[in-house]
Length: 308
Image 1 (tube, rainbow, N blue to C red):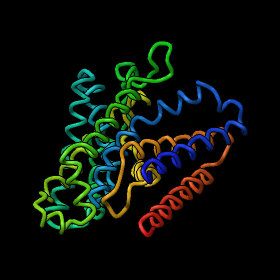
Image 2 (spheres, rainbow, N blue to C red):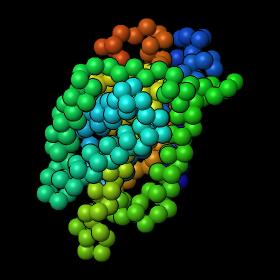
Image 3 (cartoon, rainbow, N blue to C red):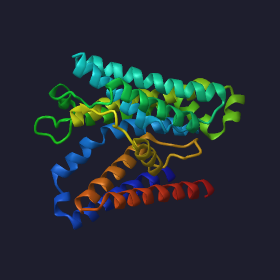
């Protein structure tokens, strides 16, 4: 019942925001606006899915914005400079992201270091590599990649949006119905108890970071498809949006509890808030204040749930 109530609360918040912005701006209630929101969220949905898995184990990764920028830079070089096809560039981006995520997880787990410290260092490393990869230049790719983020036929949604939905479903299945998901939850709830119970503690945590990195690599492809180019500055602050969506979705900052589907609803809430504030003419500082307020409210709600 509590789980069902959490879903209802999140959906009620999302609907209330849509109604509120629609009352302020009639144009908000249009297929164009809803389609624009849907086609802007695939990258964030993918990273939020991976971030949920990491945070459920009690970890966190602050490097995803820079990893997205580096993976996008790899896509730009492969397609714009080397003239490789999109599938090969996609695989390359996922491999780069997965490798960095695996490194972050392995260093954190094997050396017993806090994941936020390791990922903070990786944030700087990945951003520097992004600039070195592109020689600090934007790589213009164009139509070869834009189709991935463009609406399908007469629909308002893109292939990237549909793929992100499939990833969300797969992530929820892993977390709720597979042994690895139960291991992640057990580790986040009580690592020592999980170890005594025979749960392999190290490998699942490294795997969660690796999956987050790989999904960030795929998100970089979607981000390039939306922009038609690869910018080494891409993804600055992206980690905050991803963490905000996951926290708004109810995943505990202490680990042991989370839902990929709820994180996806959190992505919708963050994206709707951003789009609504743009339509009513809110300034960038006001948008930051509003988003920060939502994050603080979500953290307070998480604290209240753990105490109740």
